[in-house]
Image (tube, rainbow, N blue to C red; front, side, top):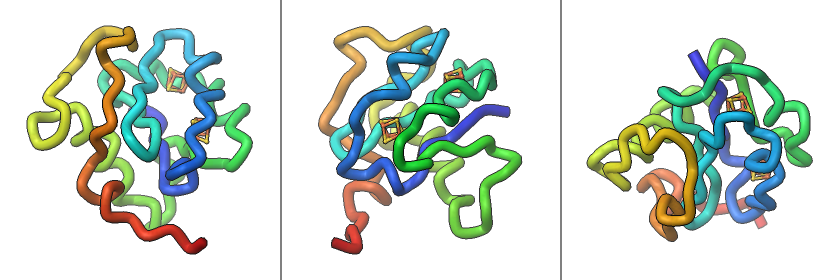
Length: 109
Ligand code: SF4
Ligand code: SF4
């Protein structure tokens, strides 16, 4: 069980959540940040500070938000970064890559 970041972070990504995560399990992609579900300890701190309400507990995602559970997970798999479990963000774990679904996401603006 973990938290996930949804589309509201796309092209916002102010990084506020990364400052409060006690285990540094939030990683930067090109258009949004992603939570590593295997590293998240489910504390909820990130959700409480996100200015655009872009973070959800997995058990509370709506039907529309459900694809983001896979988006966050797959960002760390071979199909995107292949990072697996880096055991906490460090500078080398930042990329301009995104999950394909995010790379192709059309914003409403
Ligand atoms: S605080 Fe919210 S908008 Fe900012 S990077 Fe984190 S998820 Fe994205
Ligand atoms: S719920 Fe806690 S551990 Fe998980 S990503 Fe948010 S701040 Fe980090």
